[in-house]
Image 1 (cartoon, rainbow, N blue to C red):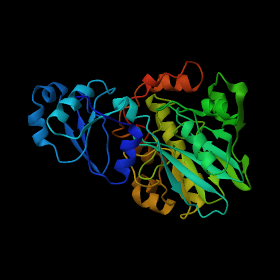
Image 2 (image 1 turned 90 degrees about the vertical axis):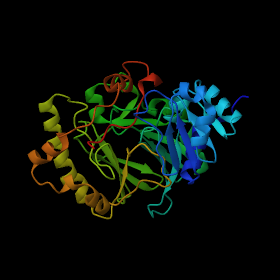
Image 3 (image 1 turned 90 degrees about the horizontal axis):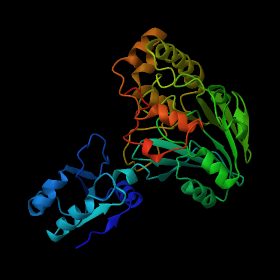
Image 4 (image 1 turned 180 degrees about the vertical axis):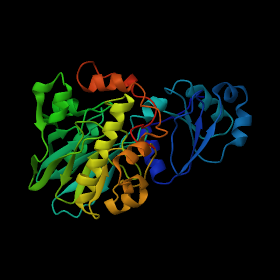
Length: 369
């Protein structure tokens, strides 16, 4: 008996709707895994599941079971054996490699007439990107490598992708900005600081400097330099109502300052710069400003991540630290490991090497906690 497949997108949609699904993880390394409120996770080695599928079946809850391996290959015989044992088992198509590419769109209502915003969530890695549309024009910010969804979302919103922005040279995931610009003929924009760091495709980029304004169908989108996570980190202030903050400030944390200048002294100086950025450039925007971060914890979410700065202040105690040195100490204490392959990802996103999907593994490590 063969087992049917469940696509990553379908699994993400079902989990987001609150459907109870058991995730049976048969991988050796389960340090990064599928996370969702509606998921019941079980870990059983593949060999054990194949040796006694009846015993495994007795331990599983009633209802559908998604069998997860690395690439969807090992899961096939396990799921088939469990189906013989009476379990509604299905193979997660592509395994965890497929899961980290899954994308979901969530609406964000900023209350701006004529403006539509979609937050594109990547639950396998915690990346957030955006489609903003007004007046038939669409701006895409920090797109993932799979660009089809962005084109489709723009079409659904009655718009054409005219501008693509990367908020900085990413270190934890591969950028789809160039691919999306090629696909749509859109203008590729990156911070002027990114060109200073070095881009092999600089001749294709329209630099985005602090204070530059993009006209999105009558809606003002203003570039706001936010150095600290990197020297080129740049956010977008949308209609004076929301800040697409890139990797600077998150809903419940702060960006790590050690991915561009990784030595201790360099990271400390970047942390102090981030302190000034948050206090002088972000928190001064007003407590009702909506933060649209570009990262969150890797998990399936049922709605968009779009807190006000008042809510972020309450959730992030480090924002109350006045002294830059103490702030740097707080950020750099017990930092999590750097993202896997981050130097190679920076090289690929700079155009110095071909973007290899194998570089992406594990979850998001761009926050300090």
